Image 1 (tube, rainbow, N blue to C red):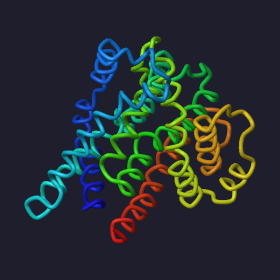
Image 2: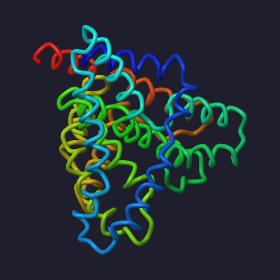
Image 3: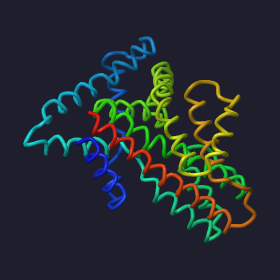
Image 4: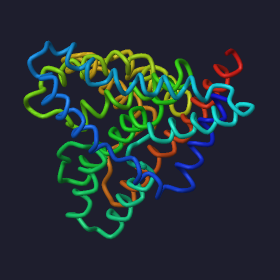
Length: 287
């Protein structure tokens, strides 16, 4: 059921990207602020406040998991698994964002290109095309791990509750759904996200190397990084550098070369997804 749930959810993501609009997490901010008002979470230690925010949602997921387990010959369990995986992916559908960015390069619309790069990266992009494309390509690898691969890992190995936990923590950290009064809870969530990302990030590194230039990717991995300030940043830096080196990236001098490099990055992610599906299939048979 695990592999089938993942496969169906990924097919829905690919064939019906409009459904990704249903993955909105504004409610998480409202829920966090409501807890802050009712229970005064901001007065608690970071880890305690973070736990109070996520625990009720995990208990609700655990309850539904138990209700649907083996129900109606496993059909309800399968449907619930598909729903959980689909809503834990993203939240935005990445392939459509990449296509829009490629179109902006072709149209030579610099303002649109910068805007789309910012949406994809969630950080200020460089203005010059060659620097921006390198930044976007690296961002694609980080986003693929965050939006897809880590969800597959936690769902395949530990079930729906773990997948929901991962997406909740990721959104609390990157979606900035905790206001300034809950900064300690957000910091605790960031540490926890770094821990949760550690194993799937390294499986993604292997998948990138296996699906691209293994030697170049391995060199990037062995070189490591000295810029990361914590595990969270280290995970991202390694995924960026190994993925980027695995496509044998070169500095671009034209819009055609820029488009080619972005397409190579997307192609590497798709090939790496096949590796991840094999991993989840093995886990499904083992369990």
